[in-house]
Image 1 (spheres, one colour):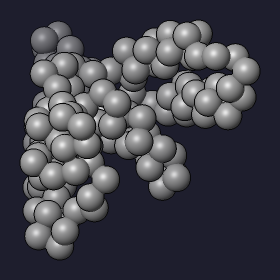
Image 2 (tube, rainbow, N blue to C red):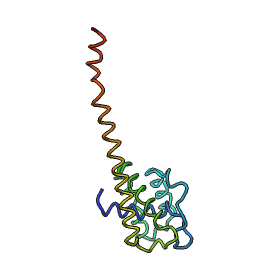
Image 3 (cartoon, rainbow, N blue to C red):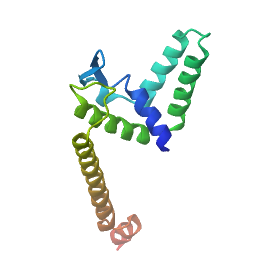
Length: 145
């Protein structure tokens, strides 16, 4: 996924993940962890139908968002959702328009690194299990002996 697409998706998710009071982030929506690309896509399509068709820029923006969601994979979508949840956790009590400060950026980087390390560990454990298991053909030959 390109950086521009990721940024666009982060903007889209701002309507789904944070619980807001005005522009202040109060928390994370309980549905955020269960959010899927299909759910967001269906909501964007429903919203587009409700828009004033004469507002060309709004309809065009919504069409771009729909095209993005149709083009990305579920895995890419979930990775950005997880990143957005981490960002929102750091912004609770602050304005959604206030950029993350240095400490918040450091915490976010640390969380993302830990998540990546965890994923790599799981991947290496799976590879080890696969290496330890003899191929199916060898198992069958042993049984025939």
